[in-house]
Amino acid sequence: MASPVVEDPRLDGRPVKRIAFAGDQIAARVRELGRQITETYPDGELLVLGLLKGSFIFLSDLVREIRRPLQVDFLVAASYGDAMVSSGSVRLVYDPETTLEGKHILLVEDIVDSGRTLSRLMDLLSERSPRSLEVCALLHKHIAEHLRYPTKFVGFDAPNEFLVGYGLDHAENFRHLPYIASLQ
Ligand code: IMP
Ligand code: MG
Image 1 (cartoon, rainbow, N blue to C red):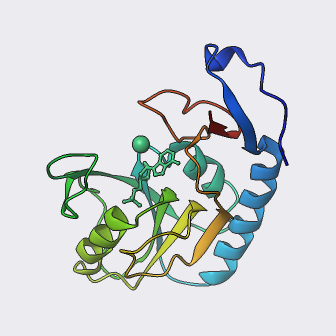
Image 2: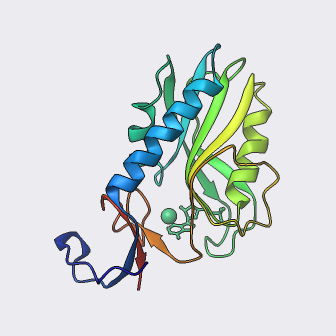
C-alpha cells in the first residue's frame, strides 16, 4: 500500500517512495522472532553475531527479546575487489574475539540480497566447529542465486526495491530511520 511521501527532517529532503515497514510493525515482528529464537535454543551457549554495520539496530532490538542467556559479538566483512561487482570472496576485517567452538551461533544480517556475502561467511564460520550455525535476517529479497545455506529466521519478505532505514543505508546515510523506506 502506498503511503504519501514522508515529511521527515532525517531525510534531508530526499524523496522516499513509500514506507515499506513501519516502526511498530518492525517492533512486533522482532518480538515474534525473539520468541521463536528463545524456543529454538532450549540449552547450550548462544552467541549472537551481528554483521556490521547494517545489523546494528536490528540486533540491539532483537537480543532484548531473547529470553535466555546469550553473548553478543560482531563481524565486519569486506569483499575483495570492486564492491559493486562482488567477486564472491570475503575476508574478515574484524573477527569475533569470542570462541565459536561448541556454541550455537546465530548470525544476524540486515538483508539477504544476492546472498554472496552470507554464503562465504557461513563457510568461514562453519570451519570453527560451532554446535549449530543459523542465520537471522531482518529482510529477505528471495532473489538470491548464491545462497547455499537456508535463512532460518526471516523478519520480512522484502520487495525488490532499494530499502533504507533501521540500519540499512544508502551511501552510509539513513541508517537511523526508525522505519524502513523505499528510496525514490
Ligand atoms: P548480498 O551479498 O548481495 O546478499 O549483499 C547483502 C548486503 O548488501 C546487505 O547486507 C546490505 O548491506 C546490502 N544491501 C542489499 N540490498 C540492500 C537494500 O535494498 N538497501 C540497503 N542495502 C542493501
Ligand atoms: Mg550497505
